[in-house]
Image 1: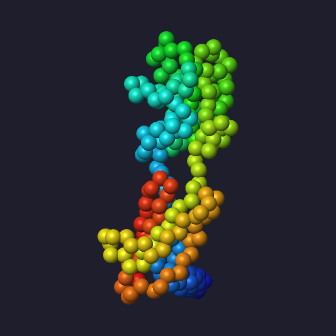
Image 2: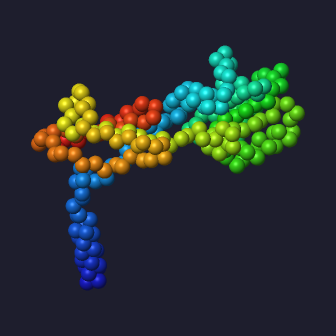
Image 3: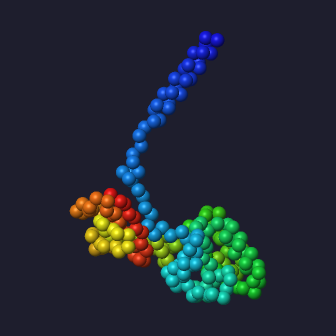
Amino acid sequence: MVMQDQAEALTKNKQGKLAIDTEIESTPPQLSFSTWRVNDYDLAIQHNEAVRLACEHIGVTRSRADGYFDGTLGRRLVKIVPFNHPLTPLDLEDLMQELKRRPEEERDITLVSLGVELKARSAIEEHNRNRPINKVHLIELRTDPKYGGFFKHEPLTVNIDSNYDGEVFKVALSDTPTRKQDLVVGSYELPAPPAGATVAVKVIDMLGEEAVVTQSI
């Protein structure tokens, strides 16, 4: 019984110490770092826009009447794989099922993707060895020697309104890099606004997309 009482006391002491150790004041949210992702397009949602941009980048002739293929590149049919995942064997199986529904189709196929699974690449090689028609060609938009560079990191413009009224954005400071390879500074000094003012920071990308962050002081 004595040993059991000692064990219970020891357990209580450990639990009590743990509770005390974890009661640490956290940093106020307004003093913590914030990470903002500007113009990080959700290509799964905006697939139609992604297809349009990819076709313009590669030079694909769009085919609105085709329910599966997105257009043609020379004599080849073109299929844009959704950009929310790399090309997978399931995408290739989907293509093969579509070709079975078109037994008269003899043109080669160009698949456009962001990344390729190793199994998918092997499956393409095997397919091309075994079929005299409908050979599959791949454009991987991150690494392709000719069509790579689909994604470009362009500089952003940062505008600051130190006394934002919620309606009209009055620029008190604007930071725009003079060269494409430059970056915005990210640290600015402005005269102190009146108490209770709202500071607004607007970030604009090369396509005109905006993100506005406000903070009352």
